[in-house]
Length: 226
Image 1 (cartoon, rainbow, N blue to C red):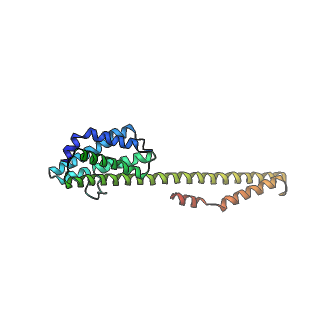
Image 2 (cartoon, rainbow, N blue to C red):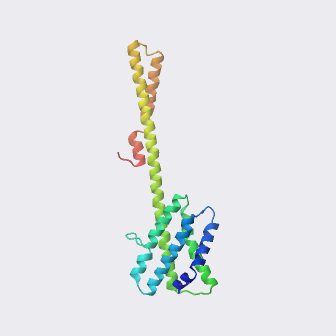
Image 3 (spheres, rainbow, N blue to C red):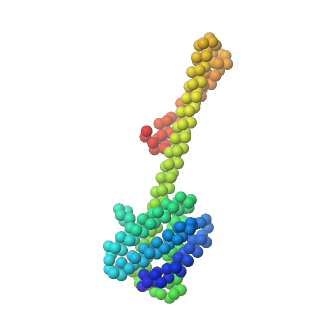
Protein backbone atom coordinates (compact mmCIF):
# COMPACT_ATOMS: atom_id res chain seq x y z
CA UNK A 1 0.00 0.00 0.00
CA UNK A 2 1.11 3.54 -0.69
CA UNK A 3 0.78 4.59 2.96
CA UNK A 4 3.25 1.91 4.03
CA UNK A 5 5.54 2.84 1.13
CA UNK A 6 5.59 6.48 2.24
CA UNK A 7 6.38 5.52 5.80
CA UNK A 8 9.15 3.07 4.85
CA UNK A 9 10.81 5.43 2.35
CA UNK A 10 10.10 8.73 4.08
CA UNK A 11 13.73 9.84 4.46
CA UNK A 12 14.65 8.87 0.90
CA UNK A 13 11.67 10.77 -0.52
CA UNK A 14 12.59 13.85 1.50
CA UNK A 15 16.19 13.58 0.28
CA UNK A 16 15.10 13.31 -3.36
CA UNK A 17 12.68 16.22 -3.12
CA UNK A 18 15.29 18.37 -1.41
CA UNK A 19 17.79 17.55 -4.15
CA UNK A 20 15.27 18.43 -6.89
CA UNK A 21 14.45 21.76 -5.26
CA UNK A 22 18.13 22.56 -4.78
CA UNK A 23 18.89 21.96 -8.47
CA UNK A 24 16.07 24.17 -9.76
CA UNK A 25 17.37 27.59 -10.92
CA UNK A 26 16.67 30.52 -8.57
CA UNK A 27 14.63 28.44 -6.12
CA UNK A 28 16.98 28.99 -3.14
CA UNK A 29 14.73 27.27 -0.64
CA UNK A 30 15.28 28.17 2.99
CA UNK A 31 16.35 25.53 5.49
CA UNK A 32 12.99 25.96 7.26
CA UNK A 33 11.02 25.27 4.07
CA UNK A 34 13.06 22.18 3.26
CA UNK A 35 12.83 20.80 6.78
CA UNK A 36 9.10 21.50 7.25
CA UNK A 37 7.32 21.73 3.89
CA UNK A 38 8.11 18.33 2.34
CA UNK A 39 7.83 16.24 5.54
CA UNK A 40 4.56 17.97 6.44
CA UNK A 41 2.97 17.20 3.06
CA UNK A 42 4.20 13.58 3.22
CA UNK A 43 2.62 13.20 6.67
CA UNK A 44 -0.66 14.65 5.43
CA UNK A 45 -0.67 12.39 2.38
CA UNK A 46 0.09 9.32 4.49
CA UNK A 47 -2.66 10.12 7.00
CA UNK A 48 -5.11 10.69 4.12
CA UNK A 49 -4.31 7.26 2.67
CA UNK A 50 -4.61 5.61 6.07
CA UNK A 51 -8.01 7.23 6.65
CA UNK A 52 -9.23 5.86 3.32
CA UNK A 53 -7.88 2.41 4.17
CA UNK A 54 -10.03 2.57 7.31
CA UNK A 55 -12.95 3.76 5.15
CA UNK A 56 -13.14 7.14 6.88
CA UNK A 57 -13.86 9.56 4.01
CA UNK A 58 -14.76 12.45 6.34
CA UNK A 59 -11.35 12.29 8.02
CA UNK A 60 -9.67 11.91 4.64
CA UNK A 61 -11.35 15.07 3.33
CA UNK A 62 -10.60 16.94 6.56
CA UNK A 63 -6.90 16.32 6.01
CA UNK A 64 -6.59 16.82 2.27
CA UNK A 65 -9.95 18.10 1.03
CA UNK A 66 -12.36 16.61 -1.55
CA UNK A 67 -11.63 16.45 -5.26
CA UNK A 68 -11.79 19.97 -6.62
CA UNK A 69 -11.10 21.48 -3.18
CA UNK A 70 -13.42 23.30 -0.81
CA UNK A 71 -13.01 27.07 -0.60
CA UNK A 72 -15.47 27.32 2.29
CA UNK A 73 -13.30 25.22 4.61
CA UNK A 74 -9.64 24.67 3.79
CA UNK A 75 -8.19 21.27 4.65
CA UNK A 76 -4.87 20.75 6.44
CA UNK A 77 -3.20 20.39 3.05
CA UNK A 78 -4.87 23.58 1.83
CA UNK A 79 -3.85 25.62 4.87
CA UNK A 80 -0.25 24.43 4.69
CA UNK A 81 -0.12 25.10 0.97
CA UNK A 82 -1.53 28.60 1.45
CA UNK A 83 1.28 29.43 3.84
CA UNK A 84 3.77 27.95 1.38
CA UNK A 85 2.44 30.07 -1.49
CA UNK A 86 2.71 33.28 0.56
CA UNK A 87 6.26 32.41 1.62
CA UNK A 88 7.37 31.91 -1.98
CA UNK A 89 5.86 35.23 -3.03
CA UNK A 90 7.68 37.03 -0.20
CA UNK A 91 10.92 35.53 -1.52
CA UNK A 92 10.23 36.80 -5.03
CA UNK A 93 9.32 33.55 -6.81
CA UNK A 94 6.86 33.08 -9.66
CA UNK A 95 3.67 31.04 -9.73
CA UNK A 96 5.22 28.30 -11.88
CA UNK A 97 7.84 27.74 -9.18
CA UNK A 98 5.02 27.19 -6.68
CA UNK A 99 3.62 24.45 -8.92
CA UNK A 100 7.03 22.87 -9.44
CA UNK A 101 7.48 22.41 -5.69
CA UNK A 102 4.53 20.01 -5.58
CA UNK A 103 5.48 18.38 -8.87
CA UNK A 104 8.87 17.49 -7.40
CA UNK A 105 7.24 15.43 -4.68
CA UNK A 106 4.94 13.62 -7.09
CA UNK A 107 7.88 12.75 -9.33
CA UNK A 108 9.97 11.55 -6.40
CA UNK A 109 7.21 9.19 -5.24
CA UNK A 110 6.59 7.86 -8.75
CA UNK A 111 10.28 7.37 -9.55
CA UNK A 112 11.02 5.52 -6.33
CA UNK A 113 7.95 3.31 -6.72
CA UNK A 114 9.04 2.32 -10.24
CA UNK A 115 12.60 1.63 -9.07
CA UNK A 116 11.26 -0.51 -6.22
CA UNK A 117 8.83 -2.30 -8.57
CA UNK A 118 5.94 -1.55 -6.21
CA UNK A 119 2.56 -1.24 -7.96
CA UNK A 120 -0.09 0.96 -6.38
CA UNK A 121 -3.85 0.76 -6.69
CA UNK A 122 -5.60 3.19 -9.01
CA UNK A 123 -7.49 4.60 -6.01
CA UNK A 124 -4.18 5.40 -4.29
CA UNK A 125 -2.92 7.32 -7.32
CA UNK A 126 -6.21 9.21 -7.36
CA UNK A 127 -5.69 10.14 -3.73
CA UNK A 128 -2.13 11.27 -4.46
CA UNK A 129 -3.34 13.40 -7.37
CA UNK A 130 -6.16 14.84 -5.27
CA UNK A 131 -3.76 15.88 -2.51
CA UNK A 132 -1.35 17.42 -5.00
CA UNK A 133 -4.16 19.15 -6.90
CA UNK A 134 -5.62 20.70 -3.74
CA UNK A 135 -2.17 21.65 -2.49
CA UNK A 136 -1.24 23.34 -5.76
CA UNK A 137 -4.61 25.11 -6.03
CA UNK A 138 -4.41 26.48 -2.48
CA UNK A 139 -0.79 27.55 -2.87
CA UNK A 140 -1.43 29.28 -6.20
CA UNK A 141 -4.59 30.95 -4.85
CA UNK A 142 -2.75 32.28 -1.80
CA UNK A 143 0.19 33.31 -3.96
CA UNK A 144 -2.06 35.25 -6.34
CA UNK A 145 -4.12 36.88 -3.57
CA UNK A 146 -1.02 37.97 -1.69
CA UNK A 147 0.49 39.35 -4.90
CA UNK A 148 -2.63 41.45 -5.54
CA UNK A 149 -2.54 42.73 -1.95
CA UNK A 150 1.11 43.69 -2.41
CA UNK A 151 0.34 45.46 -5.68
CA UNK A 152 -2.55 47.36 -4.11
CA UNK A 153 -0.34 48.43 -1.22
CA UNK A 154 2.32 49.63 -3.67
CA UNK A 155 -0.26 51.59 -5.69
CA UNK A 156 -1.62 53.15 -2.51
CA UNK A 157 1.86 54.18 -1.42
CA UNK A 158 2.59 55.67 -4.84
CA UNK A 159 -0.73 57.55 -4.83
CA UNK A 160 -0.02 58.90 -1.34
CA UNK A 161 3.37 60.12 -2.52
CA UNK A 162 1.84 61.81 -5.57
CA UNK A 163 -0.82 63.40 -3.37
CA UNK A 164 1.82 64.74 -1.00
CA UNK A 165 3.86 66.14 -3.91
CA UNK A 166 0.77 67.88 -5.30
CA UNK A 167 -0.22 69.39 -1.96
CA UNK A 168 3.33 70.45 -1.15
CA UNK A 169 3.69 72.13 -4.55
CA UNK A 170 0.40 73.97 -4.18
CA UNK A 171 1.22 75.10 -0.62
CA UNK A 172 4.68 76.38 -1.62
CA UNK A 173 3.43 78.22 -4.72
CA UNK A 174 0.51 79.75 -2.83
CA UNK A 175 2.77 80.89 0.02
CA UNK A 176 5.22 82.46 -2.45
CA UNK A 177 2.39 84.22 -4.30
CA UNK A 178 0.97 85.51 -1.02
CA UNK A 179 4.32 86.89 0.13
CA UNK A 180 4.85 88.52 -3.27
CA UNK A 181 1.48 90.27 -3.09
CA UNK A 182 2.17 91.50 0.46
CA UNK A 183 5.60 92.78 -0.60
CA UNK A 184 4.14 94.59 -3.62
CA UNK A 185 1.43 96.23 -1.49
CA UNK A 186 3.85 97.40 1.20
CA UNK A 187 6.48 98.65 -1.23
CA UNK A 188 4.01 99.82 -3.83
CA UNK A 189 5.94 97.71 -6.35
CA UNK A 190 4.91 97.42 -10.00
CA UNK A 191 3.64 94.15 -11.41
CA UNK A 192 6.25 94.43 -14.12
CA UNK A 193 9.11 94.30 -11.59
CA UNK A 194 11.08 91.38 -10.12
CA UNK A 195 8.56 90.74 -7.36
CA UNK A 196 5.80 90.76 -9.95
CA UNK A 197 7.72 88.11 -11.89
CA UNK A 198 7.85 85.93 -8.78
CA UNK A 199 4.09 86.36 -8.39
CA UNK A 200 3.51 85.39 -12.02
CA UNK A 201 5.72 82.29 -11.74
CA UNK A 202 3.90 81.22 -8.58
CA UNK A 203 0.53 81.59 -10.29
CA UNK A 204 1.80 79.58 -13.27
CA UNK A 205 2.96 76.85 -10.91
CA UNK A 206 -0.45 76.77 -9.24
CA UNK A 207 -2.16 76.64 -12.63
CA UNK A 208 0.11 73.75 -13.66
CA UNK A 209 -0.82 71.75 -10.56
CA UNK A 210 -4.52 72.51 -10.99
CA UNK A 211 -4.36 71.48 -14.64
CA UNK A 212 -2.83 68.13 -13.74
CA UNK A 213 -4.40 65.16 -11.90
CA UNK A 214 -6.63 66.28 -9.05
CA UNK A 215 -6.58 64.84 -5.53
CA UNK A 216 -9.81 63.02 -6.31
CA UNK A 217 -8.33 61.45 -9.42
CA UNK A 218 -5.18 60.36 -7.60
CA UNK A 219 -7.22 58.79 -4.82
CA UNK A 220 -9.54 57.13 -7.33
CA UNK A 221 -6.57 55.53 -9.08
CA UNK A 222 -5.39 54.01 -5.81
CA UNK A 223 -8.87 52.90 -4.79
CA UNK A 224 -8.95 55.25 -1.80
CA UNK A 225 -12.20 56.96 -0.88
CA UNK A 226 -11.18 59.26 1.95
